[in-house]
Amino acid sequence: MKKKFLPLVLAALLCSCAQDGKVEVKRIADASYTVVMDSLLTSFPGGIAYLDGKVFWQDPFSTEEIMHVVDVERREEVAAFGKFGDAGDEFVMPKMSWYKDKFYLNDTEKNVGFSYEVKGDSVYRDPDQVAMESMATSFLRVNEQEGILFKPGDAAPFVYLSQGEAQPYGKQPIEGVADGFNYFQGIVDYNPSTKKLVYSTFLFPYLAVYGVADGKLELLKELVTEQTKLDAEAEGAREMCTTKDYIVLVQRDLETEGEKPKPRFIRDPAVAPHSMFVYDYDLNLRAILHFDLPVVRVAGDVQSNDVYWVAADEEFRVLKTTIAL
Image (cartoon, rainbow, N blue to C red; front, side):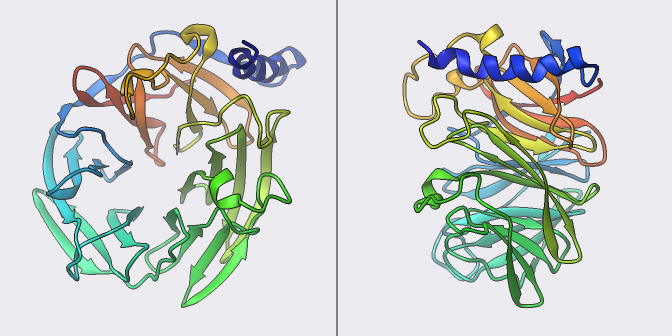
């Protein structure tokens, strides 16, 4: 029974800083949202992204197109692209990335990559020359030519790619772990407006912010707790995104949600958290937003504090919440 209290203890410790005159944490019950897309035709959505007025969402189980594009103003799907397969322009293990109004798919299993621009209802595709690596679980665009690979098994897990050169940076959350690839899996996101990379782990609570400048990464701050260990009883965030001013983690808030129920089947969306934990870039917890629906995926607008998220209802829905603290 000890396990279910640990995330709450962590939140309480973070909230206590308000008593020292630092940051007051707001709890927002029944947080509001608007509907962007009422129904996604998928058995379970993969990753999502927001750029240039559009939400891109991945269908990892599709026999047709991999990516689907929802126009936020029109509130409808306007395009779809990419296919799984062995052909020269198809994907085996696609990784999403984006920069400004361009969206990219690059394959970690074969040397295939394309950029996509969606204009109106049309999709324009061009080859992309970035070479991926098989042990990379994510790729973040710094600009059209440069990016950062996330390789959780490496001692320096972030690899900056520029002009054919690869330079490793960063540190693992816990030193001296041989099987970092399995233990340090997590979510990474890059905010080009703040030039900061954020990293959060799945298996235990850990959050780090890196500054990105001149082809280099510098660790700025870590959020480490007594549960930042391999045998942690508390889990890390299941989803994360960045906005103009905030880092948003999807976690279970046990004070309002109670203990996680047993899933009825693999990928049971009903057991997903209902809460978003909102941090600033100094890793102060600023707010906990609670929703009446499970939060399955999140994407942030780095030009504002809008969060686009996939909720599990009778159908998967794309919703929008604006963080105003």
